[in-house]
Amino acid sequence: MMTGTVGNDASIAFPRELGIVVDGLRQARLDWRASHARHAERGIQFPSRQALRRILRELGAALFPLRLGPPELTAGNENAWVEATLESTLSQLGAQIAIELRIARPGIDSLDEGLEVERIIGAFAASLPDIRRLLDEDVEAGYANDPAARSVDEVLLSYPSLAAIIHHRLAHRLYRLGAPLVARVVAEVAHAETGIDIHPGAAIGRSFFIDHGTGIVIGETARIGDRVRLYQGVTLGGEPAIAGGAHDGSGGDGTRRRHPAIGDDVVIFAGAVLLGPVTVGARSRIAGNVWLRRDVPPDSVVEAAEPAIRPKEAGE
Image (cartoon, rainbow, N blue to C red; front, top):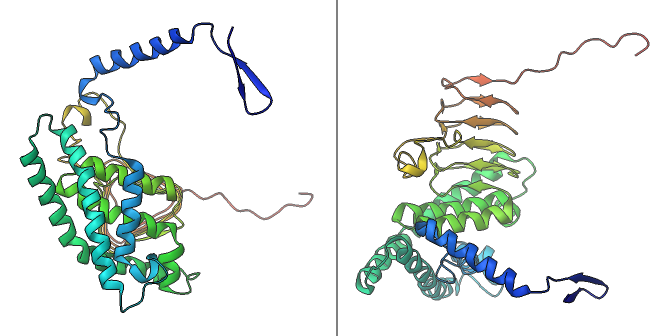
């Protein structure tokens, strides 16, 4: 029997014929690829999570150069740095989108691929000034709604919710332009780093604020209005998949709303779970730990049952 060491002390025993294990794993891969041709592993020809993490970091710095860029930047040289950064970063992003196109459109020729990448990257780049303005409003909303915030710079530099929102604004634009796989990887980079899970298909209005944020889930077809506040642990989820559901084309393309629609100026407190295509009217308040599967009219308050409070009796 073969043996190997783990670290300096422990030892483990390998099967006598490790080749049998390797062959078995190979056959398992082949069986999967034969029965799931559309979803087969693509090896290195798949958008790179590491590359997209780096690309998103550079895009964030290009949006906020004096706060998220290198320390040597000044107001006098930031524009030249932004131009050089975008030229390099958008080219790298285009390469990732090209990989997605080859997966989504097997056999696409190089000319069509180049034209489609050029279209997506051109439209994405043109939208960056508007995305910056949206993010400015999100930062202002964070400062206005959190008494603990001492400045807008603190919100931008230290709030994980802002990192998640920056990623989402960029990912949502890519999703809408026709790069949903790259957008989803971008969203999962943010999820891993912040604990906030926002599907890139979700449409989010202006002045969005997430307080704390850990454990928030926002599904693909969710629609969120302007000036909405969410607290940690909120779920805007869809109903469980059933036969005739998303994977047979009856909802996964976003044509049917499966997640909540939240009106303007709504506040949803910690731990609330909203499931399915419910609609919450403007200016409503949803209390913590509510489980909600029905529509809510505008200007409503939805509360969870509260424990009874009684006077303390003698001897207790």
